[in-house]
Length: 566
Image 1 (cartoon, one colour):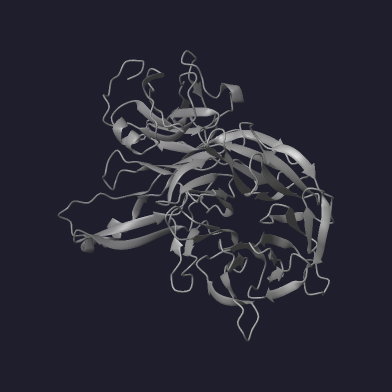
Image 2 (cartoon, rainbow, N blue to C red; image 1 turned 120 degrees about the horizontal axis):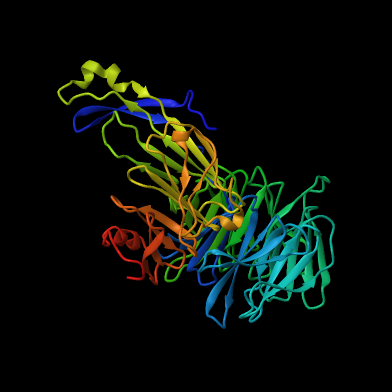
């Protein structure tokens, strides 16, 4: 159970000329979710961002807005993402590979996994799409068992279909990249060896041993092939190396990085290379054309360090009617965008200062400082209910400076009232707390869960949302009796309310003020209003677009509506 000892601070500020004491209690357990993978559609309109929690965000590159968010899952380990285009439907398809060995296609309408298959080779470290191939598109899968496998994304067929497996190599296959002519694919392994394969015959064309010859174990974390065929590798020694694709000879090597190079990327013309990794620096290298006195060569250009923690993902994309951008994601949960053309002269831009959904909801029946405020904290697998601290009430005629000690002292400390846990591994998508603090709700893939709080929530309760119900009974029928959660004193028990049958998964929840109605928005953009007193859906609006206007509109709908559709 979370505690508050030693974590309260006081800050004095002025509001409208009066001194106000702000008490900060760090009672909510929260940690940023690292970015593990990035992938952009070929037309540069959408970027998919995978996070360590297993969630995937879809960002519109025109206005850099997070359009959709696929909820995460416990123990999920998404390591790579890839887009393909379905010509039969005219839509982009998103695939992911994970360290759990699963290949997943995601339903971008329902915001959930649509097809899950096994890689047949253990953990998936990298996905590489053959952008030159028509239908079906080939996807190279770098597997943990040392083999590279080719899957196909066929138009109109869900999931990835297995095509072939290349010869197994020593160590793990950590990275893969297609040659621009699609005839060759290169792989990097955990033993520091780069292999080049002929796709049509499965024949190994080249075997290159990277490293400085010291014999130390080396991991080739990232690979790419430039338009002229030059291979670029980033390894665990912090080296960025360029290789001749015909003979496998080392052309140049750079040691700007002091730790593992986790990602390399290149501009569309192949004249600029970017590298980043554990030491958080984003390094830029540029090719100088040959002159009468010198041969063609690559030079180190500049470095940027906007991130504070390990950078694990990077890509170059060209949004419609815009210049090419470099995008990086790191363990600090941040996304930064850079100008490829003006990398030296422009500053990185933070895509979003708060990329993660806030999980805090307040209920303040009274604005008096002597009255506590209820706080709901939504975590991945549970929700916590807190009662904030309060101070002694004072009159406006009382001078704050004359009685600063009594004004600043708390008459009641923050109190943890309840914790409601869920079963299963799917994360909680959203939550809500009614304005009067009498009800709380949260939604996950299993359904909608609503609890009624005691009038005087003084008991400290630890509740399991499924203590008395199986997974299939999570959404109770409208005719069943409300279930009461276990734990706590008689006056402090939480009562689980019965919900209508067949409710969809909600991605946003809000209680309507001064009513018993709960507003929910689905992934498809439908808006439902559930009357908690009658356990009926009283309003159902089918909309084409998921917008915040839906929730604003819900608050001005008639407070009383009969069952059915409006």
